[in-house]
Image (cartoon, rainbow, N blue to C red):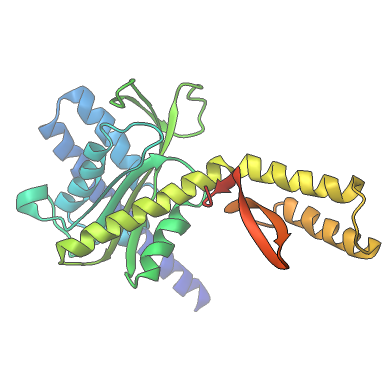
Length: 277
């Protein structure tokens, strides 16, 4: 019985893969008919990587036109982007306006590749009660000119593409449809703020770790008015944090003082990092 069930599963997976291949093959044919050969080849490579990690069950739920339209929409959005700035769109795809349709609201974003992007974006959407139905997150290597125009797609990131290559995250996220234009604007604004926070935390990560190293060093060398065992325990805890057990989002220095019998904390200028910039 186990062998028969296993065989059925293999046959089912094979059928899903065959259906997937047939759909994406038709997308390639559409590209060949609608674009010049060189551009069609670039977009076809983009589409292949775009859907590479999407489960066959999800791919097969699309029509050919919608597979084509969803990928092409992100391709067009990525045509121009200044490094260091995220590009974001939240909309309800309609055939007459966008060339494809969906029963979901779609979030498209392009940004420099960074840690924490997927968790931050989907976590924010979930926090507002928007169910994430699909999240596609390919990472591409490419070159852009000084104005941010796409010059060349280099394929997948991390394949020896050269120091001048950019590594960009491109996301396609589908949530339950939101019909109110004001809600769409709010989602875009909120996600924009989230991406700014991610960038701040990632860019300031080295300096925040260095501040932790300074604190550890002070505990090792400094003469502190605390019990020795307490200092040792505190230092051990900070060293544990330093050993990749903690995600640094922000840090800030305060100056402590007492005046007229009251405690006072003031922010030290230039000493706020990450999301506390």
